[in-house]
Image (cartoon, rainbow, N blue to C red):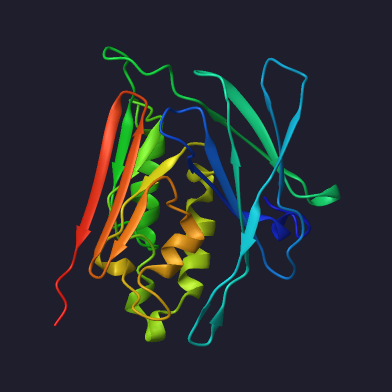
Length: 233
C-alpha cells in the first residue's frame, strides 16, 4: 500500500542506461511540483551510498498537461550486483531495487520476458501476473509495442498513460523494460510518439524519421534492434 505522502513520487520505472549493462535510467513523476530529481543508490552489500541528479520534463497534449517527469541515469555499476535505490524526499521517500546483468560474454545466460499489446484491462493484469509468476524468472522485459492504448480514447487521452504507468510499476521499477513503439503509440501532435519519448525515455539510441521509430539497445549477451514503420495516407 502506498501512502498519500509517498504517492507524490510515483510511476517509477527503469530501463537500460548504456550499451554495456552498467547503467540504468530511473524515471518517475511528481504531480504537483518538480520536487527533487535526485536518486540515492547503493550496492546491497555496501554501506556507501551514492547520489545522482537527473532532469525533469513536461509536455502538453490537447487538454492534457503531464505531471513532472524525472529521468536520472546512474552509471559505472558493477555487473551481476543487486542495487537498492531511493527516490523522493523526507517522509515521501520510496525504495526499490534492481540487479545488474552479468558481464557480457558469448556463453552468458540471461532470460528476457517478452510482452506486447499489454493495455490496462483485467486481462492485462492476468498477463503481467503470469509473467511475474513464471518459473523462468525473467531478468528484463523486451516490450514489443502497444503499451497504454491511450489512442482508443477521445483525443488520445494521455491520462491513460498515467494509469498504465501506475499499473506496471510493480514490475518495471525492479527490472529494466526495453521498449519498442507500436502503432498504438502514434501521436502526430504535438510530435510523433512524443509522449512515449518523454514518459519512457527510450534514450540509448533514438531516431525519428517521419513514419519510422528506431531503437538500438546493446547489452547483456544480446544486441536488440527495434524497428517500427507505419504507412499513413
